[in-house]
Length: 208
Image 1 (tube, rainbow, N blue to C red):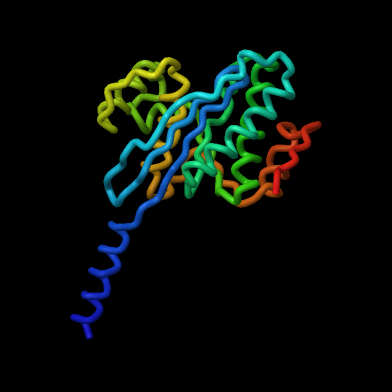
Image 2 (cartoon, rainbow, N blue to C red):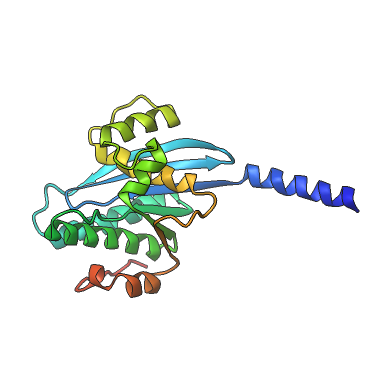
């Protein structure tokens, strides 16, 4: 009986090691949104893609939000992530900047939830600390560490891309819930109830 239990335990461990999941990370912004996609295979992590979505050519703030929603949906449909990790707005910023970032984040979350993708939120400090060991690391230090961790040499045009990738890698590191400052939303209703100020006045129509 003990031998059978040991075999079942070994099989469970092997299956767990073989399990794969795709994680998408997003660094929200109203001018440039960074994103990164990784493949987690057991204890190994591989880079799939990273890049940015630009809104600099748009002046209307609501058209920017529309582009964020549509491009996030396109990225989700293309890479089919199992989960989306997103950076929370930095509360030390100017209140107007914070409001804009909050709306951008809310729209990206809405896009993920419209595709039934679970979302987890991380503070900027938590992300930097997970990647570099320091919550005060610069964007350049985060990018350099990611290049070493994921073994890529290309330097993105915008550091927003590596910031988005950092969120995905940060989520990959949280295999065991540690009680850190992160928030998971299982659906649009739970997000709205917890973030009423972010979605006030915003109506998102998801295409069916």
